[in-house]
Length: 89
Ligand code: SF4
Ligand code: SF4
Image (cartoon, rainbow, N blue to C red; front, side, top):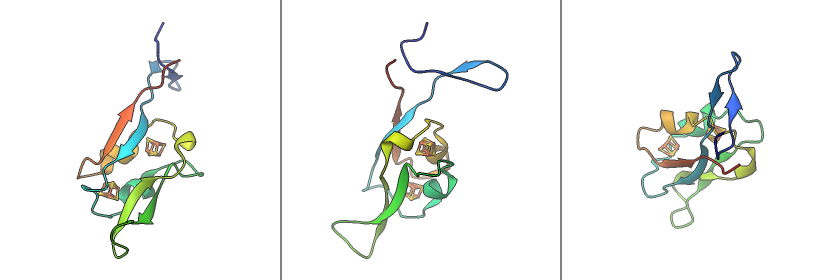
């Protein structure tokens, strides 16, 4: 049995979700692709003004609890800003 939280595919195959942990604001170019692709209605991530440069938008984790661990946001990010981890069961 996995020590991590697992899910099941429609066909009953087990998979291990990996939840978003961080988005690197130094690498983020503010394209917004990761926010658009997130399927969670109570978005786990959103665009926000950079604290050091109000002209610049960056992606932030706004509601970690909403993340389903699909990793879609990381897959569409050309800058590889996101890091993910499975959750201990
Ligand atoms: S996809 Fe990557 S570069 Fe674009 S907003 Fe998201 S984190 Fe930033
Ligand atoms: S891993 Fe999936 S659910 Fe979590 S923030 Fe990224 S796109 Fe949204």
